Structure formats: C-alpha cells, structure tokens
Length: 262
Image (cartoon, rainbow, N blue to C red; front, side):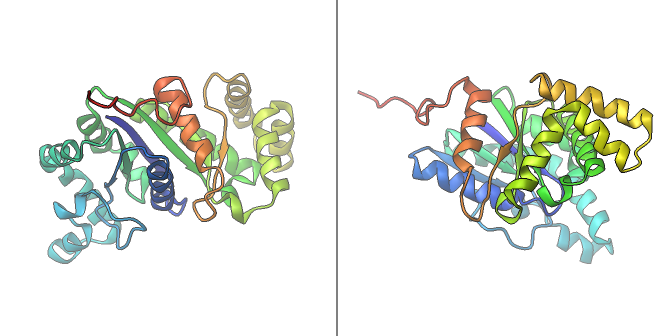
C-alpha cells in the first residue's frame, strides 16, 4: 500500500480534492481506498471506504460531554488512538494499492497535537507515504499570507515527517495573473522581499521569508507548486504525477498496480 495524506487549513478543499483525486485514479484503473479521518465531518463529497465516525463522532461528544466544536474535535482526535487497531485492519481489508487519508478540517489540531502524528504513523506503518498540502489561492495572494503558508507548510512537514506536495487548490476561482503572481513570489526571492516590505513586514521576518523562498527556488525544501481544481478536475493529473514522483520516482499511472497472476 501507498498512502496519500491530504492536509490543509479549514476550507482549503481537502475532502473535495480527496474525492477528485480518488475518482481520477479509478478512472485510470488504479486501486484506491478513501479514508475519512475527520470525526467532525457533517458531510463529505465521497463515500468513504473507511470512516472514523463509525468509531468516534465529535458531534456526539458535544452532546454527551457538553463540549464546544473545537473541544469536541480535540477530544475526538485524541480518542482515535484507542481505535487505531480497528482502523488499520479496515484499511488493510480494502486491499487497495493507494490509500487516501482525508484529515480533519482543523488541520492545526491534527498536525500540531501529539495525537495527529501518532495516528498517521500507526496507520501508515513502514509503507511509503506522501502528503498533499493544500494552499487556498485567495489566502496566498497577499505576500504576508503567502509567508504564513510557507511557515505552516514547513511546520507541518516537520511534524508529519513525510514529503508534501503543495497544491494550489480551487485554481478555477482565481485569475491566471493571480496564480502567476503567487508563483513569482515563490520563485523570485528578491521580488517577494520587496512585496513584503511594501506591506510593512518587519526586516527580521523578511529574512525568514528569504531563506524559505531561496530554498524553494533551489528545489531544496518544497516540491514545485501544482495548480488544481476539484470542481473542473483541471490539474488533478498533475497532482497524481507529483505524488507518484515522490512515492516511486516516476509518473507511470500503472507502475504500482500488481502484475496479473499467471
């Protein structure tokens, strides 16, 4: 099994990208399982093969324990640990070659609490894995916001300890010029610095931005940004190709399918 972990801030489109990527992979005759790891999800745009809500539901905890939405989500994610064996067994029983893990809407709670990495490492084990880190283009269009994205990307990569493919999600809702501006800020550190100074960002923070963008431009810290839209399916093939490059060093759609038994 190969694991794909979908991460991103609330509202960045994690569940929609999960659905779109899984549908695209199945259309290309790849074996894939969809796993919902969000215990607070009210509705998701796909039918999960494995669903954490069968074991723990944040909305039930709100009613039973008198918790607010965030407190219930924290408690639910912590409670996942006691159900990991069952979740792992369910995932293995799918016998899928690729497993897509759709993580909780509040990524910060999942990625930065100790439970999140424990859940991921227990499910993935020693298998190969890669993450999809979603970037909301409306948020990333401002220089200071893009810097926040870079810092969050770096922090999450350290926490989950796996390569992450940055994906500019909802690419259909922004203009080509806006996407070009985001790419220019990432690929041209001096230009990004100038934009940050224009926005009033203090010099010490700009120094941090310089080191991050220089590493990106040199291909040292991030896989190249991919643009995609779950709504139009544009760029989903590029997301798969980037993941395949990270997972197995190639882009052949059928590379990891088992050979027919003779």
